[in-house]
Image (cartoon, rainbow, N blue to C red; front, side, top):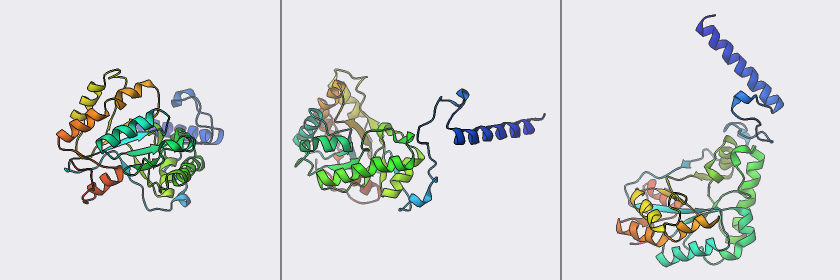
Length: 268
């Protein structure tokens, strides 16, 4: 058997396995994992085109610009203790941020953010912080839709951005985002709370030194005590970045800058 025939045979075998997988929801151990998502997950981004109501969906890690602007983002809240501390630090420094909220947490802790979001932006981070990449289209839509309505109800905002939990992005998530008209926002820099455990000054120095124009920074306003290294370092981050000439914007303002617009950024 020559190499071409061998390859054709291998591909045919793989196709047969794939067909069997689709029908039985069971995968052989050599396929890379033992069991697939229960509801089918990993849907192709062109799996159900009837879901699409918008022409496209952008996936943003950062924005291309030479303007010295940066967007801080906070995931997973609102949560007792953490979210008020983050809001206090932002307010003291006059810095806007984008909060990617978990709908269930917002419903449970709306009082924490009521009246405190004037300069900030709110994005969708799913209802239950599920791994959206393992869900089928309907389940992803349910996660996003419930949170979208909670954001409207409790903040009076209409979200236009979403961030998938863990940064895990499957085809069904892209379809659901296109259906809702969301841009998908990831990040280009992030806090390293384990590396800089108990050393907020080092965490702050890392961010101040690493940030480039157009960066989106990932942080959290919920979680365990390791989050404190970020919270306690925020003031130093803001001060250090201002010294470097940076201004602070929400993600939507950052996108506008990348599109050629001038941001209404926080002044130096």
